[in-house]
Length: 328
Image (cartoon, rainbow, N blue to C red; front, side, top):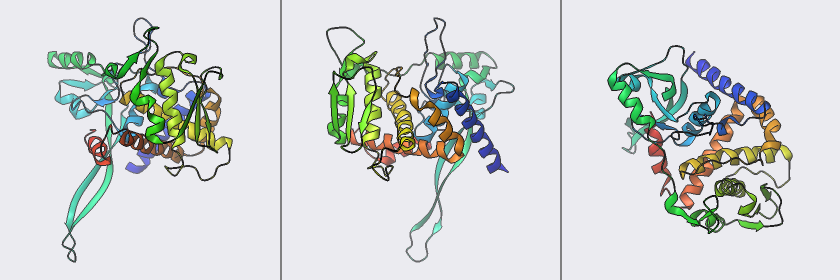
């Protein structure tokens, strides 16, 4: 019965995502508006108690939930964690599902005398900070402090040009083609901000930064190109034919992974238009099977880990997995 309820919850999330895509809205890019009308997010998905950012699949589960519900913040915690801090979940609010991995010794192998390890995951229910209210002064203070915590920016990585703040270079991002070993062409002839990827030659082709609305929009697109370029290494490409459905799926993986990378580096997410033509295909693909969204999230998670390791932002897979185990 519990498994059926989990599947029902996941299907409900997928149905909402598909509905938004059919409306022409990408829900994971959607952010709540502040009083001035600007779209902002107080913090990226993280546990409000431990302050650990959500990683892996949990990042996507919570990021999608924020977009679908228009929440202003990425702070989440379990019912009991909010209660322990003098807060309570508002009546009628629905939780967001996250996964917590576990690894337990369940015995010893009599032949090798080695421990027998049982591994797996359990589902946990968390609630966004916008879904809770304070019970008293302690809770009011707790919510106030957490609402004022903002994400770290990567200003220390930036090299501004002489023309203003909207355009700047980030050396570690500019070095991605060399780090990941794919061909990269930046051309002033390209119009607009559309990304192109030539699978036959493994070449990412992009307009110059000045074609984009900002440096953030440029680097978001560069991250997408990097994810497309490593697709074959990650085992996603089964052939080299330009099948339109396969290409759309790859761009969905790249869309998810690039959003993760922007948040991971504290970059303000920017609007680009390259994804618009894929919205109907994405909607049909996700509608076809519950498994499809989970598979895309898995591929995006693996791509992010691969890129971060190659950039030496994380040293090992175990480091990122350890962070994920503390998500609740």
